[in-house]
Image (cartoon, rainbow, N blue to C red; front, side, top):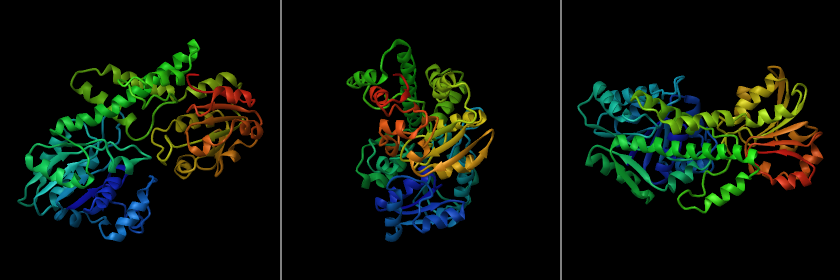
Length: 436
């Protein structure tokens, strides 16, 4: 089937590459010519495990193409997937400008009957508006239907999550639209849950917000564990055997980040308010996460007289391992505070450092300074204090004794509970974590 994908970010590019891998003929559309040339050469503009290899494979097979010419890409497509961003606005609502731009371009370009599929995360009711918007600006006498097909991939495992999803959610308003989407996904051999469009839109938010709730709940319990003398990891282990709860998303830490949970919790909260309803559980998750991000900084502030002039090692910058994404990463909030306090930071991340440099250039910064190193142990060299913000394997591989050996003051604040408390103590490390 001839498929066009609008947008080549985490959602659009991964979808396009995986559709090509499933045997479809795919064109990915982006406005950035430099980005298109990069992808044509087989280089992925984002770091995602396995993505670049599949790009190169399907580029060579002639099933995957890239262009800035949206008119030619849209005019004779069997299906057009919209995978552009819906960033958060200051009031917490989703910015649908990019959805609107693409919808109008589609309306003015299509020359045959076509199914338009919204893959981007959008507020409930958006697909209805997209269909009306396209019909308002349609140039040719063709039949256009709109369907919802939200993605549930996790950054760092997006390709695997797409090719081996637990289920595919499709939201349609006609048997024809449902049939086309089922044909597109038939090669994947995955369970398909078919619902109406508004239910599909809500499923996306309900799933993401439930996981955000779970994370915030565990962080809240972790904070209480510290006060009462319990160990959150023991608590989580005990909980994990309960099949009603499950074993995933029970790890306490310094909060969630990324492109989904922060944005989607705020968007659902905003949507509820529009209808005069208060989602108290979701609001609580948002509040807990906001305060959790800087919990270790506050602990360190109580321990230290000042951060000014101290050499501080920062291990991990991305919001999670296996991605270079910095959106809502806890490292951002903490580094901002440390630099304002006059700290001299030495930062390490195996993938996200280049992205971080764009926000915090190397050298003097605010009242302090920041430098970047390519090995985690170099960051530790003669450091007065260490913060761990991302649980990369390269960081896990550092033994407790190496903190003692390399640091001037072996003082570690671990936001991901990587180490055993007793092992760090036995190694002579002053160690602070979450909920233990």
